[in-house]
Image (cartoon, rainbow, N blue to C red; front, side, top):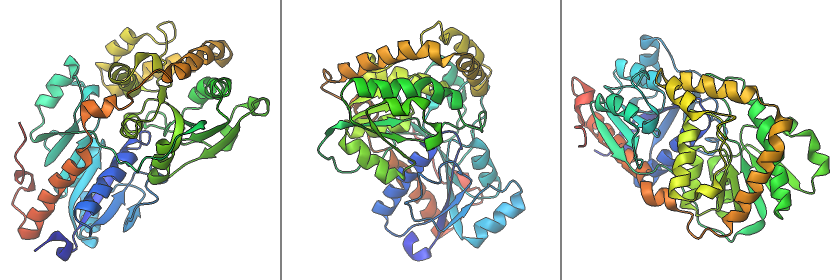
Length: 397
C-alpha cells in the first residue's frame, strides 16, 4: 500500500537561526510533493521561517515544539504522524525520537561543528550536506553519528528569466538567532547604507531589499539616493523568481541563498558575515566562485584566529566574539571603506563568466535524496513499525 493511500503525515521543524532552515524545508517539501504528490505536513516551531514557508501546503502549524513527551505523542497521534524531518534543531530531533517518531535530521553546515556542539548522534537518519572540505574540529563529532548520509546541495529552483540589468536584490537574511533573538540592528547599520550607495554608484536603478527587515530599518539617507527601493519579506517561490531575473544579488553569505543563486547562475556579491557559519560560507564562495566578489571583514575589525579559538567551546562561543566585534564598530568609520569594497566587487562581477561554482561542487539533488530517505521511513511505517524505528536505515559509507 502506498503512503498516499495511508494518509500518514510528516512533522517538520527548523531551527530559528536565520532563514536557511525554512528554505531547506521548502526545497525538501517540493521534492516530496513532486516524487509522491499526496503528502501531509505539520510544522512545529520554525516561527522565524513562517513567511518563507507561507506558500507551502501545511496542515497545521504549532508555534512551539512540545517539550513534554506525552504531550508530543498526543499531537503526533492527532495528525497521524509517521516520521519527522528536522533541519538543524538537535533538541527537536531528540525529543521526536524519544516520543517514538523516527526522524530525518538535516545538517546543511557539517563543517561548523566541534566536540563542544550538541548533535543528534543517534537519530534515525542524519543527512549532511556535502562540502569541499571538513575542518579538523568537525571530524570527531561527525564520526559519532550512527546513521550518516551525505547528500548533495539542498535548494529549489525556478525557470530562468531574462536578466534585468538595472535591478539589484539586496538580501540580509533572517538576522535573528537564539543567541540574538532581537535581531541584528547593528549589522544593518553597518551594511545597508554602503550596499545601497554601491548599487547607486554602479548604475542600478531599483533595489529589492529582502530579509527579515521593515521599512523603519532603512537608513536615514534614503532621500539622498536616486534609487527605487522595495522592502519585502518573501515566500521562497517569489524570492527564487527574483534571483532568476535580477542583474545582481548582494547578500549576507547564508549558504541556502548562495546555493540558490548558484543554481540560477545569478551574479553575486557577498556582504561581510554576520555570524559564524557565514564566515565559512563566504570562504567557500570565494574558493568556488570568485574571491574578489566576496567582501570580508579585515583582521582589524574581526580577528579570525580569535574566533577560531573561541569556537572550540561551541558555536555560540564563536558567535559571542563576532557579535562583540561588530557591536563596537562605529558605522560612520566603516561606511567609506565598505562602500569602496562593494563598488569594486560589483564592478568585478562583469568579468566573471561562471556563477554556478557552488552547485558544481556540491550538486543540486540534495532535496530529492533527503525525500527518498524520508520515504523509506514512511514506507516502513506503512508496513509495520519495528521495535526500534532507528533500525530502519543502515548508514551510508
